[in-house]
Length: 148
Image 1 (cartoon, helix red, strand yellow):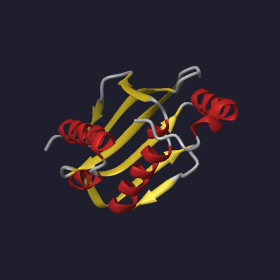
Image 2: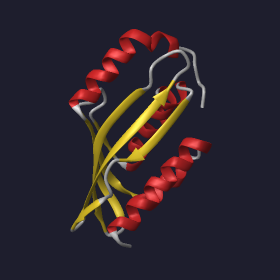
Image 3: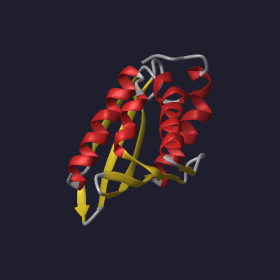
């Protein structure tokens, strides 16, 4: 399977997982010993398919689902170079009575033999500052919320 096909399949299945909470569908895209790096984030590294899937599920439960809505969009088309793929993204979170929280970053993948071996997600420094400021001002409103 081509690198771009693996990426598109994983991305589509991830969005289905966000919608229906069936996270097991991601296993087919990840190598058993895959590595996930959340560059600059609070949880920087996860090793192994199950740990990565658990992290993604928990991240959605603890962040995305607390907002009224979440919109993910590609800023750039996926760029493929050999077995590596990168794409810039933007996610916009909305929560009633607050300004939108907009986070931008880049995802980088290493895909070998039809499986994702490594993922690096990196939010921009400006976005990390925006998240900190938004959470400091409005974060308490998210407590106990599970909108989505």
